[in-house]
Image (cartoon, rainbow, N blue to C red; front, side):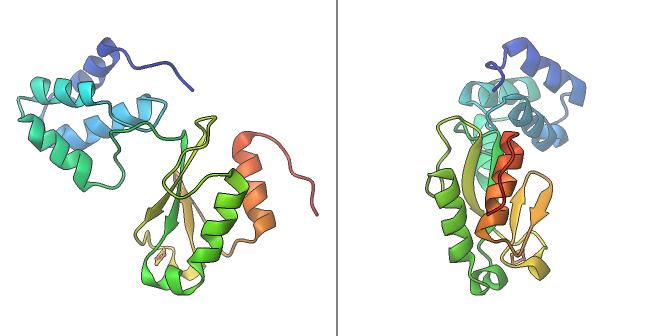
Length: 163
Ligand code: FES
């Protein structure tokens, strides 16, 4: 996990985007990525509002409207399990159980090592793989407990013995 973001780093991100109001989402996204904990701290939301000349409520509107943002620390890897109808009917519940069991946490929680957060998501267009899971830009589908174990081990950088 990287250390806490410094004010200079955040100002640099804002400056690199040109301080345009239209850049709000791009700025918030970059701050979130640079945080190392997948979130935008409240103090950085305030700084962004000041620098862009926006009301703080406008920044919070963006942070709360878009599911990709969080104002609370999350895991380095966000595991998004689709809960839209096609994935739901293809037994999304079993998939949720596999991830919860493998990680030892419940949906909405983060592993104690700060590596993984489990959360629900709306359809991300991988319905043919239902029930589908997205981790960062990668999409996985038709998973078994063994495959889930392998995926988690992969992100942890360890190998899993096949059963
Ligand atoms: S419904 Fe789950 S990815 Fe489309």
